[in-house]
Amino acid sequence: MSHGDVDPGEGKLDLVPLIDTVMLLLLFFIMTSKFTTEEKAISSLLPTDKGQMASSPSKPVEEPKQVNICIFPKGMEKGYQPSEYRDQLAKMKLPGQVINDAVLRVGAKAMAVDGRTLSIKDAAQLTNHINEIHSMIGGALEDFEPMAKGPERKDQVPVIIHCFSGMSWRFALIAYDAVRYYEGQRATFKFSGNPDELNRMREVTFAPPRIRNYSANELGNELYEIIHMK
Image (cartoon, rainbow, N blue to C red):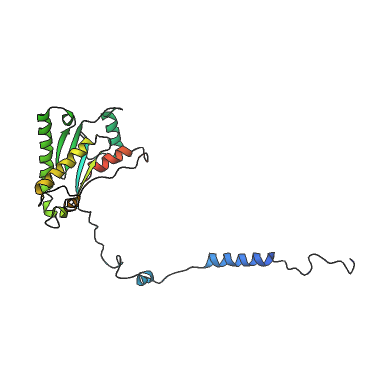
């Protein structure tokens, strides 16, 4: 090699061995290091005025107070699994058919509701059946009166209507009408039509709609929840 020729690798450091050594050292420390905390060290750092301390006794979580009106097909009872309710529904309701026989339950009280009677033109028979529904729901709601937080109707525990989605909504609407009729009889003022007066009335709502097509036992799960609801 002549004096004028320069070796391309001359003057450069080969860092590959150094990088390998550093990586090996890092892996060694990661594999052999062990981090421990002093006993209850985390608890001592947490605020004592928020949440539940580790040393305090656990308290049972109370269910929100509400009146559940449950409406489901007649003939279904407690004690079955969602898949069994699904199979019962398949035998009870063929495609295109309507479920006319329902059970309406409020607390420990229940009654059968005939959907055919609610659809007939016989005014006397229809009125009698509606009065029976109003009487049953009104009697059941009286049992919850002592749970009120104050003298106003808005202080009464809210009412939520759970109607099985595979049934006609007329069952839910007749239950809603019965609750509003009961509240109208108990109201401490005469409703004049002013929407602001609704704020003084008891809260009555329908259960939120279900998420569809998430499970093969979708309807069975819904029936299980409604039938076993307190």
